[in-house]
Image (cartoon, rainbow, N blue to C red):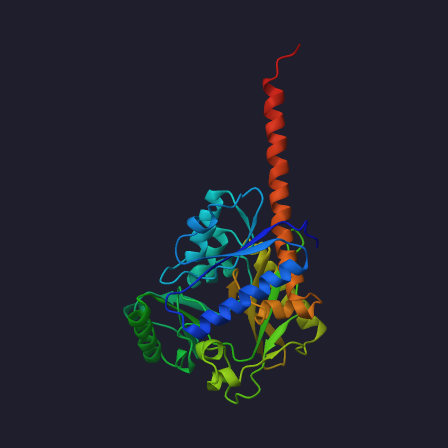
Length: 355
């Protein structure tokens, strides 16, 4: 993949609720992204915003600058990342990452579930419950219960795994009270968890697999990526869920995982990059079966995140990975400009008066 060294705006937002430590971490990550782009010959600047992107971008020409969209979420706003993309479209900017429709499709986990089923992509049995009163029957235990429209493993704790209809109803009630929304319930897949990064358009490429190492957690029902494992340093889950960057999988299983991940990427209309998470269940005969448990079209793109780790395993530095993603957006803009020029020329030809 190549880029024409387009000038880049790294667009990111801040949370008013962030701690000083979190602000300093964000500043370091932003500088690392800018340094990587500068080293490869890009002009690059960072634009920070809280809620409104327009003031910070007003002085930049959308025909010149590419937006590296580093907006993962907007504080207290569901689908804020999709709204930002819609505004970038209105302003005429070309930006990296997925379009608003794909981002909105992935927010509501019930929709994700139905989309996977529609495309015959293996996923655990599941359904959504809007309130505890809706929970009248469920037979797939143990089950895991999550908020239907949250992300980043919100409310995923060891208590999220339930074993009876009564416990399921209580967990749905807890989520309704805590988040004011319904729940998605799935059969819990006890087994390995594999993260699959994918990038590219036309012929997307699967990055090297990464596995969450649960070997320090003896209870299979506790082997999952919880909120604490992502966001609470030095917690039990944080310290016992390292990432194995070279998971041992058979050739057949690897091929099946990659095929499922690519089909998921295409089914959701992903572009540029995304991540698909799978759990691997081993049946009584020892056959390993992958199931998609999450589709993330806007994954963490920081240098110490999983997607960048997959890029490193594929031989790309962090700067090269960011620049390659920029190159995908540049190619998209070039194709659009060429199409518009062709259409304009055709209109001129149609109205031309013969001599």
